[in-house]
Image (cartoon, rainbow, N blue to C red; front, side, top):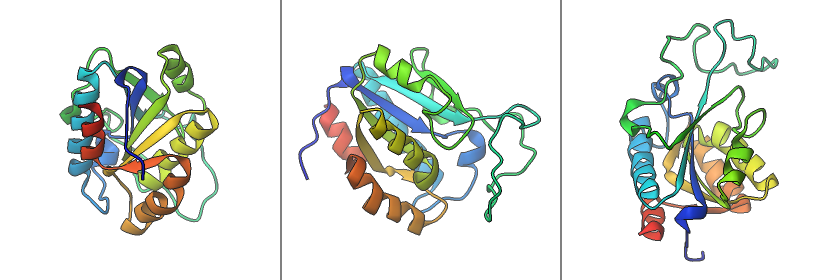
Length: 192
């Protein structure tokens, strides 16, 4: 494992789905409030050093006709009709005016959005990824990020999934092939 060195001016924190509806669901191996707290620490530290923060959320039109509807064996865990604030970023993280809030319509944050454009215009080379769910939105975004040429850091203790097994599979077998897996404290130390 190499030491982590981050240039805040070329680093973005990309946060996946820390929104009311997703954070309300049970997660493992840690609770959503722990993921939110660690992500807030990272956002505050990176923002203070001039880094770019992207809050990604998934949202749909009221009729949900703009969302993917594949035929699946395991349906999504959220209800068909969602409360009005379901897709709002959780208040605990305190989105700032210079942060970027991006709305996606599928698992990953790149396809069908302007994420790559926003990162490139700011000279971003490295993405630090956090969020829920590790094995769905975070992993899908990570796979696209590698294809777009970004370096990546995966903050293991600022992520959770529907099960501990799903989280562990992605963190142990997928992420090490796409970037570097580190803790919140490792990233904070690299930004200090």
